[in-house]
Length: 260
Ligand SMILES: [Zn+2]
Ligand SMILES: [Zn+2]
Image (cartoon, rainbow, N blue to C red; front, side, top):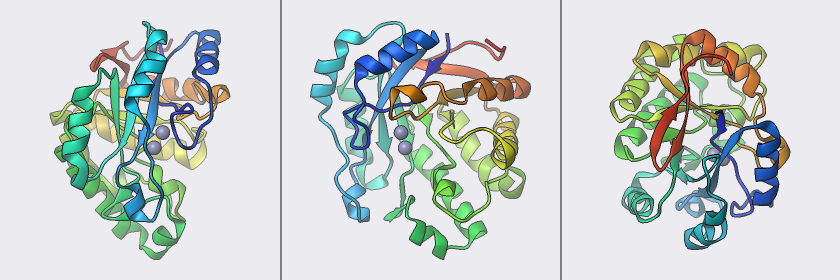
């Protein structure tokens, strides 16, 4: 079974989607899904607004839908000032999967076009990849690292290629392998053109450092986006010999690298 391991419903500030519509769409596609609602405890400090939700209420409301095709997760904004709170939260609730995200870096909002436009591409990417490695080392309790390409979406930069930042990527990937953190393949953007070639080089680099597992993520905020670009992603991972996985009860479940 293929599981779309990253999506948002009305518990997230940026989605008003109903869980029932998500489940219906998943059934139609013969896929499993994991909801991963946003919690970014530091977001107000970077000039944003509070991004939070009531986890008790989340479990009370969605628990009844849990099955072998519906999993309950969370997307945490990583920040070393909140490490203890995040770790505590993940141990307090019976999540299936915990995603770690870098929406901010050292007090900056990584979706700020203004901030990114001021930085020099190569300097930024090197610092960002080093920071990502540190965040994995400081939050080894996460299951997967989300959308490494997140800042690129809001910047004037080229896509990150493995060859251009090999040393920095290797540091990150080695930390992920060591702490058993899975690399997400975020499919919010269509897997074509420059992005396809960039992702191919990066996921190939991940494999060269001992990485074996990948989770597929539509990052859907509406039911219609579930499973978007998965066909292209499966072909790419098959070509690279990486395994597609998902999480149930915080355990990684993989289905081999063959096309489904
Ligand atoms: Zn995110
Ligand atoms: Zn997300």
